Image (cartoon, rainbow, N blue to C red; front, side):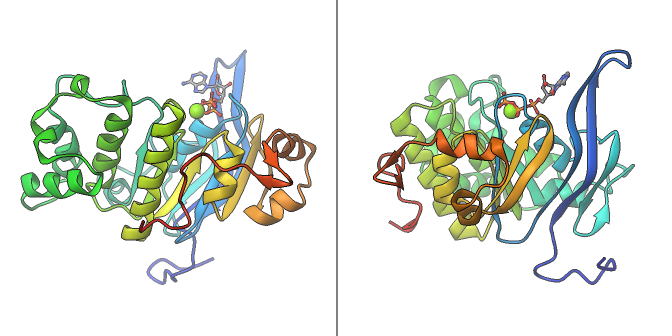
Length: 278
Ligand SMILES: Nc1ncnc2c1ncn2[C@@H]1O[C@H](COP(=O)(O)OP(=O)(O)OP(=O)(O)O)[C@@H](O)[C@H]1O
Ligand SMILES: [Mg+2]
């Protein structure tokens, strides 16, 4: 294990070691994650897949230390985050950001969009000219400068997700977690927002954790994949390897439900992850 202060470029940024998370009551527990071990390495585009209720969002919340595991440990840059104080978590808060699924509930309706985007800068105590930073971020996600003065209800779902992405990028994170970030969008808008994510990952050298139930998209954009089934990791590995030769029956079932055309995975329309600069 790497000693603190000697972090290598390829060492995991985030790690879960035998993490278990339960909800419900003591007499009637819901085991959302059970003995999950996984890692996020620099420059990964890591897909996390599994059916509804398999524990994907729970895994995301634990990676961001929005809640704590009941058993096991989450490590950030080699250091255990168990029992850390707010100030000790500050570095992780800057470095790991998330975009949630629902563009309608993830923005505070009372805040102007510019204030929503600047909120992490304020709460994390990041110095600088927040107003010009907000303009840069709006530009990066393809929204007009005047958006800063507007309110969430004045935007479409796709535009709100762009705002959510801008806010997530405000603190210049290393890792972006996208939890079904495009699932709620119409198909054509979904492709646009995916392409935007692709360009941003490329431009800012982001590490991506892409949570999705859409295996075709995961195969298209991810380099590695973790398969969750009923709170357990049943398979993980290189995307091509897992798709070519899935070991677990659940993974086999997931993959066989992906639409194909002459043996080739059907990519979403107008999807251009492989040429993100276009
Ligand atoms: N705050 C909570 N309180 C009680 N149970 C919860 C809570 N959060 C999650 N669960 C339960 O934990 C399990 C995993 O939920 P989770 O939301 O992580 O799944 P998911 O894979 O993200 O599902 P989806 O694809 O529907 O988003 C489910 O059984 C869920 O009902
Ligand atoms: Mg979820």
